[in-house]
Image (cartoon, rainbow, N blue to C red):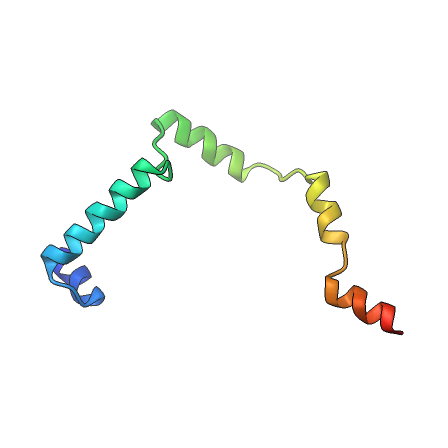
Length: 76
């Protein structure tokens, strides 16, 4: 599997493994790696599969016209 991945990246297996280790370390150090218990994952998946609730700030943002649309309307 490592050899296939390395071939697809144009790297040797050692270079590919080294790159992967550095990427994982960076994710851990910078807080991008999320670790959760099986129960936490289950709760997270349940929350994602539930009905979505509108976020008023996002609704307001989506109702704004784009800057180029505002300029075009002002030119008329």
